[in-house]
Image 1 (tube, one colour):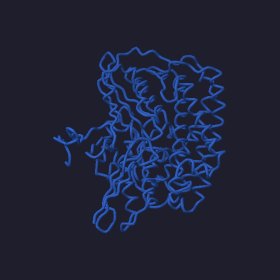
Image 2: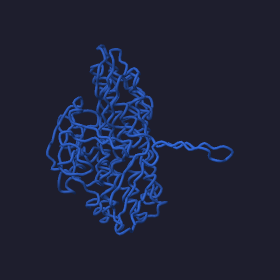
Image 3: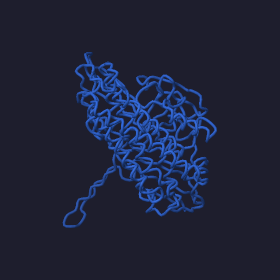
Image 4: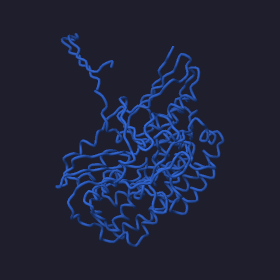
Length: 489
């Protein structure tokens, strides 16, 4: 008899979602749904507000990636006013933003992802968490995790007023410069962050890559899709989180297209399905072919692995060394192994920490000229950054008084929506056979989406169909009438 298995709620991610796995009469997987079951709808909240308020409003969309929304919103507001910010302001934003990336990657790897390998899917579910991780790596490492994640948060707070609700980045630049004492404090924390990022990579190499079982799992077909990849690159083709052009490479690794952020609508389409509050972006030039991979499908992936796949290298020496070791391990480029997102994330963490240290030592970082007052009439603008979870688009249209008329957000996670659905289905199909399923296998199915580090809440902006609703009228404890809408449809 056909059977449905539901994993709800799915765990160790930001937001709420579930996985439905449908088995056929033989107990094998016939279909799966990676479903997001909440709606935030932030695009509507912003209509009718002055555009200069949006860099302060947007960080409230999410407690995990507020810095990314603060930066993308600031850049979109710059573009609305067609204002070029001072060099010191750009460097301050980049310093803030690399600290944000470092904090987010530390959080995901040690608190959410690493328990999939350390202690692993076969461990007691009560130990597949950060406490179980610390039991293996030791309390000293746990202390280092907390200290350095705290440093990354503190740097954001020093520059932008608050680490979770940043406010200092405004249209035209920054609202305040960095003092000499603040610069020295950040430089000291930057040295610690670089050392910790190197230690994190060593932990991954010693406990994951050196373990044949986990190395084979990373290389296995269970977690493998051949898709397009997209990400920002600088003028030298290096990974850049704050600025650059968007490069897309095909499943064969060759450049498919490179475009400016302002032209994103020419290249990216957004599809809606009735069973999810997340949209399904795809490459317009290829077209939407459903949840399938290959060169004929417009599905593309973003986030750490995608950024390494589209780039020519890293702009800092230690990260470049790690980048070369990464591709030497797999022996090809692009790398299509989904679990490689974790390794790529740690390489990016090292790059972000090196950038924090480099920028904190730049003499111009304390220049007091950090804002150009906007003088042009506001119209329309697009701001793009690489969030920790992938490329993030903010697009604002205002009237001539700067009042927001329309907002479009293509959040990083939503661009991996199709790929996450594909990855969950492939993992379930490979792991569940003849009706035999247990918690270990279901945890390995969850590993398929967790590699993408999804942030589901801020990605939900579409409202497909109508909400099912049932109202029961009760009198003296007895039901007298039932009103139903869209139940059972």
